[in-house]
Image (cartoon, rainbow, N blue to C red; front, side):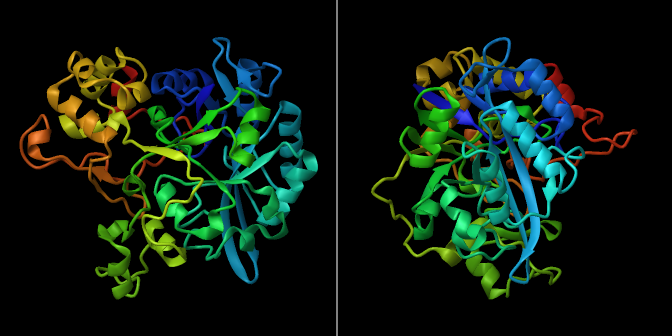
Length: 440
């Protein structure tokens, strides 16, 4: 069976996340998107695991289902910040677990080394090799996947760590790492350029970590296997049953190009090299983006395709197309009215991939229908993201529903979460865009 899976998300207990990210809403938006399997996120958090136990039931295969039957897989992300070989390291890893007993053992082991109650994605001073070995000691069914491997600050291949390959990071435990997550700012062709990644399968997930739950499935992995924990893990480890991935244009990612957000400086790698990797406005170091880092380590030309390459789709999220065609904020009432019209045709992924122009024209405007078709063909140009700022899909005036210069909506970083009065995260007032969503 074909399964579109998003196995890297976060819950309402992670910093910067909406209080709306509970099980009910995660199921709701996954169904809208067309995602058929979702990670739980944050299984080490004491409050979240209570909700998981209350609202999900193991179907006997390592897949946990809601009362409506929607499937989840136990998943979390752990931040490791430590020193090795005289240098600071910061690496995020996705962890998949087969059952609640194993989750409890993982959590108990981590609690010996720090706290798990302050954030859904907790931080530990554990080197990556020790971390993998520790989890393997609990169960060989646990899977560790290096997260968004190229992003500058918290990834194995990012600029901060300066690892030249995964072997340098995971050392003798690299044999237990089978797949890597591409992240929003890279796609398979970028990763194919690095021969040291050949022994790892490529997966893509959304890393939903936002006020905005509809970002579920903006990147996903397509499996062609049974819907069991064992079958999914086998596909991740061997590639058999891993059919491909769904990716955004890597320029849309928040760290594709080099840049400095505070000075609104965005540069191609060659341009930043000429400047000594310093901001031309303030003189401070630039944040070196994913394209630059890949170029530094690539040993193959642009366009190289390995013989065993998996199929992938490049699609901008429907919400992004709507806001830039209609010129309204991404979570406003008007955009969601247009979104709902399109949902009469099926899930978002069905609309983006399969619905004909005639079907689209029955529910939306001609310009919006053409934008969806152009997106399907990979022909939408994107102004690259940099230093925490998302990239922007670009449309000419003739392609938009409003006159004048294109509004650069949604180009900033994710909104920062404000502490609630009781000092806990996740209980913040809704802004205007969230109110627009509440009416949807």
